[in-house]
Amino acid sequence: MKACGLTSLPDRRTFDRRLKTISPDIKERIAAMAALFVKEKFVDPYIVTIDSTLLRAKGHLWHKSSMIKGIVPRSGIHTEDARWGFSHTKGWIFGYKLHITSSTGSIIVPLSADFTQADVQDNQMYSAITSSLPQGVRYMAADSGYDDYKLYNLSIEKGFELVCPVSEIYNNTSSERLQLINFYESELGPAIYSWRGISVEPLIEHIKDILKIDPLPVGGYQKAAGITLLSVLLYQIIVYYNCKTRKQHPRAIKHMLGS
Image 1 (cartoon, one colour):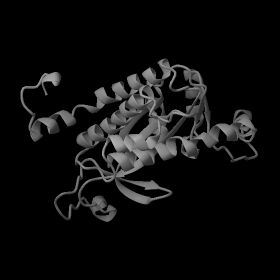
Image 2: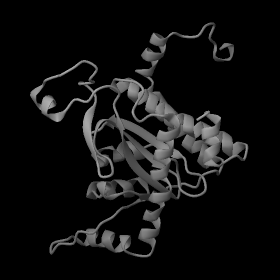
Image 3: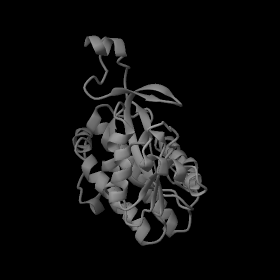
Image 4: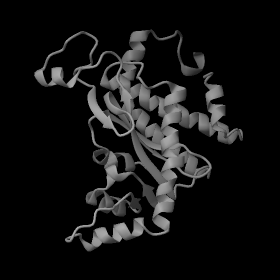
């Protein structure tokens, strides 16, 4: 405690108050850690992947029928914050969403992260979550939820290309979209996209597993955001320590946390 400048252990209310305000600072620290990984050449950001995951809220569910009617059937439901979101793998989830970008290659680590209600669409967060990426990104691999013409242009403005499934061809399909389709169906397109399955997707599940954030251990949007983003930062710090000590295997992270 003395090393942290503390004379006594803060009580639970102090932690709760800090947790409600800490998320903007933590997002900046996550970006700073990502830049450190790149600077020390542990990570090559040439290909980056992006995805999101739903996190179940603490407490009871607020069913859609009751939500529409404005009826709160019981206490312990976070009516002002948590929302329903849909996942193709897990169905409907009442809670929040973690948005994350990831490195590819031998070291898989978060490069940026953000937190929203579960009903926020992935493409709505693309600009925010890519704004703090380190220098050197050439391609961004994403799923079909990011197939948005505005995001392709935004990516080019940021200096990289967005690569995601583009399959719809109509009689009036624009030449720009045909170029995107041709690139995705080329030899390079699928090779870039394939990184998602071995980087950001298992990374998300690994973070959720070892740091126990699904369901979330705290209630309320601000505290949920704080604990989720702190988990991402903690993961980065442990991976960085493992890189410096040459203990890079993912199981080393779980062992250090006593999981």
